[in-house]
Length: 608
Ligand code: G6P
Image (cartoon, rainbow, N blue to C red; front, side, top):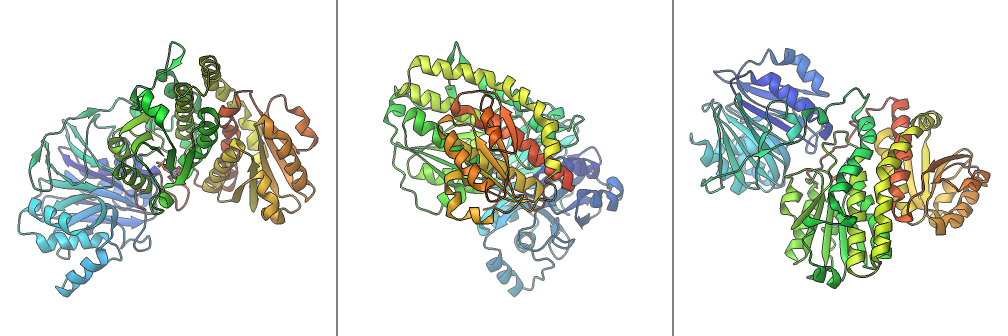
């Protein structure tokens, strides 16, 4: 969702801001803008549409000279995408400029109050209220105005703020929206995420909720909302700027699909020591594991699908009951959590608003929360009791691939660990699982070879209206993810159904030529799903089956078959998802879709 970049220092700010915003494009946006202090006043340019429109408008930033500025990519929530609603927003006098990521929940009440005092609003946004409210409280002391506003506004926000009578300062605050701060010899930065500033510095500070940051060309100061100074330690970012570049691939998505063998290896290897699983960061004693009554998994999107796969695995392998919830449902359903229950929140970004709230509710109810997170230092990583990081590196494409694969690995490791400690499986069985896990990177690599075949097959479905995915057990979870990838990337309507549930409704939608993708990697469910394939075939469906090498007799019923290497039944998701990722990718490419930034979607969903 919205991206923020700010810079103050020795260099021209506009090109740095445009470059940073380009690095944040993956977050999803529909307009862009920036405000630069030119020595006399704050000048602003903004435009609906792609960032390139702002680049063109500002001649690459040349038309906005100055060494301090803030920029923004907006993902519309309040008010349509338009030039007017794009950020930055100003107070009426044009002396205070802000960019905002988040939602001001009480903006209507605040707007009424300000209108009654004569303030006139230009845009439909909640953000403009903050600019006007700053004006309302401003008496020449930025800190004072900022803290007063923080006490009045409700909701979530990361804000970059400039006051025209304090040209050597930029202020930033955050509450439940991401904001990082960077420092180099050439100046100081704020940004929604590390890739925006990685070209300029690896020295980063993570801000906490309700903290205020004051940036000047020479340094950064942090304050509490009571204006008390805070000391913060800088973190050095280890990963390379190249990790956030396309590196010769046509799309980030394709690059990230190809990175999966390495990602899986990086996530797996550090937790395997002398043939045993060691999860140092788990934070649960063996006694606590043995006493576990229930596990709740809370997540959104693909991470939720990892949760569904994990439920099948943990329940069968470790015999612990697992409930999986979409975070936006979990947070409002008054879940019956008990002290001693374990809550696992899964999130690539670590910033998903609903997942974060699920975490907070769980902690309030006395449960330990384990985060499975990719972004180091993100809100979920910092608020969870313990974090098992996925070492996928920066994932830029909005639709997840490699982070999903890494999340699966962490959940496999966790399931084996829980099962071993509780005596549900023997050490020998655990060792056999580990052996299979070790093969996964190579097996995923092997599956990269199905790219051309999937491309050819996908080309036939560029004009498809509806595509259905079916499977049972873990194959159903794989179907959910396959179907979501297709929807996200190619805008083709798609549904995933438990294969046995088809005849309770969706089979009526099967028509001559409808593509049904059937996933059959679970041996004990294989024949059952074959029967469902026969049912849809006899209604005219064209069936593509994804199954394990050795199941060749499927060719008698399916029209097109993709084979995955043999692995343990618990780990098939890691393999079967790869051809489905390629399929979705090539349908999207064939349709000319914006693969890395699908319409209406955002990578980091920081509003509920
Ligand atoms: C968005 C992304 C999805 C992702 C979901 C959850 O919808 O487009 O790819 O699965 O958010 O994000 P998270 O960062 O919490 O994993």
